[in-house]
Image (tube, rainbow, N blue to C red; front, side, top):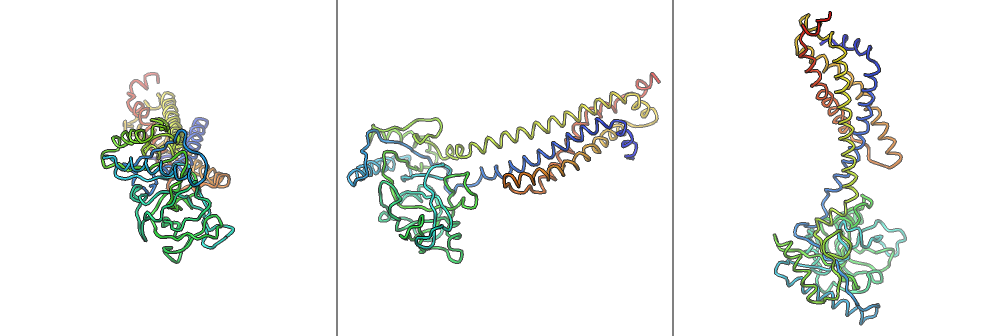
Length: 420
């Protein structure tokens, strides 16, 4: 089809063509940059935690009237209460295993420490999330041991906190081991916490375990250290693995079992995770990424609205031009133009306008992305996002113009030329 008559016709409707072209350009630029934000967030939400999440749930509770203090007798009493809870949970028929924990991936609580490879090193090589548990931590959480050994009961100690004494044995993630010891697997090597002079020996390496803070620095997202320790206090958390298909039964039984051993405790039921309740790890994952989910939903809604408004604008403009050119369409039909000729004319006209808008939109999209890179240190927008955006806009234009163009193609020549 000869595009010169179409261009000549557009020159007589410069204002409408310019406005819809600029709308297309702005829509393309904004949508491409929103997708560049949504894409990494969606990947972030889907990344694995390193745990076997199915059949895993968390019990967070606190004792009422628990002994206070950090003397040996108080700590022994608190540890005895914790061991009684663990024995009750492990004895349940629907429970496969249980371990005390101070945090889990995505929980947004817990310890983070500087990790060094030399004693008393002022600035650590990197930072890592610290996870506490006993000799059943790996089996309960479903962590994959790729080198070395698991914790044994003799490794496990207990106390009020884990800051004073360096743990003799630790297990680290493969990512942390590679970062600390790039020329060795790290097994048997010593690491130091927060500039300490007391060494901790790496006795095992697990495939991966996500940090407790999903919003943390991505370069250390897989840095984790597992410490064999029970932290004694008035509040405790237990990770519990239910037998396959027995999750809900195990959760209900766990609550009853804890109250049977000691009714003087607080275990909230249902609701949002608040450090006092029984929750599946699926709920922990949802709450860990709740802000990211909200951002993705809002930005997706904005993209849909912008595309819908742009599509409606193109449909409206084409409908207006069809009504204006009613007589010209009839004349063309009378001179031998077929319905498909009229349909292709309006589709080509829209394609020229949308194509021009896309050219400007690509420039704007790149400019906005460069601005965001400087202001927020975002990732550079992939070229594929721009290409997909252009294809979507062009396809949307053809879809939006089809109905009014089809209506124009149905105008009878005798009706359109009656007043001629």
